[in-house]
Amino acid sequence: MSNTPQPAPVVSEHIELKARNVSFEWEKTPLHWVPGDPFTGHTINVLHLLLPAGERWFVHVYKQVLPYIRDERLREDVIGFIGQEATHSAAHDDVLPHLKALGLDPTPYTAQVDWLFEKLLGDRTPPLLNAWVVPPSPGRAREWWLMERVATIAAIEHYTAFLGDWILNADSLDKRGADAVMLDLLRWHGAEEVEHRSVAFDLFMHVDGGYRRRARTWATAFTALVFLWQRGARFFMENDPSLLDGRATFRDFLRAGRQGTLPTAAAMARSIPRYLSRTYHPSQEGSTAQAVAYLASSPGANGGR
Image (cartoon, rainbow, N blue to C red; front, top):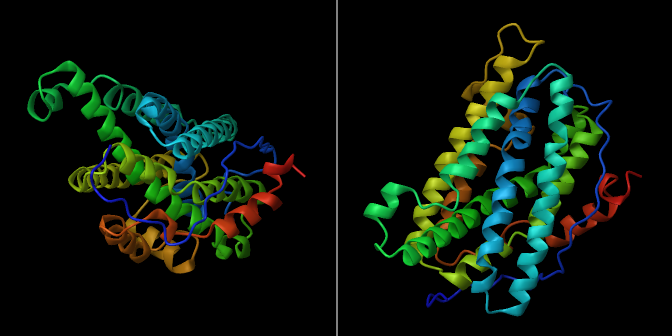
């Protein structure tokens, strides 16, 4: 357990976490679900490529760390988190056959993502790390690698909460006539990311909490997310059967940010020092009340009503 003092939440927003039975019907969702803006839709579509494997990996790692938890409420939160993440993975996975039916086969990209999470970030400590970073004892090496992955998940969850808060407030997508079912999926998922935004960080602080590890794994996670996201956006644009010369450029990203259909580069940059601050706590991000209110009204999270 960490000897580092854990930053206290700004406010007490603790809520019981539960996996919801969700249902989304994709038959009427077009490939370009943001009308006239394939780049924005495909940039957001990268979530469907990354999250099924990524969130299965979250669940796998957290099941391994459960024996290290000595706080009963945190254990309950982690179990609730596991249930929600498993549901997220399945819901995004269900979008992929629809994309394939529309002529955009995601398999070449998802195969690479599966390799990343199952092999590179799997249970076997990478040989170079095992040789140069961690003690030679196999048991110590396994524990070190487990804590690295717990810290990495905390860093990733900072950005999923950031994106969750953004999508809940992205009125520009509604104004552009974005597909209602896709928006509901994204906002249901985003609301649950806001709802459980403190769990990954609290777990890391409970089992380790070292600042150097937090900063190191943030750098790794942020670099990987930027690389994978731009690669995924390029994959979608280049393989979209309805685009003659589909490209994904940074200029397009900046344009979409100005229009409010994607997060701005400035907002993403401002999120970096917040996470790296020694006084950071995820309760400083987003609103639990807003998230819970959306979850109560989401058609997909309430039987497709």
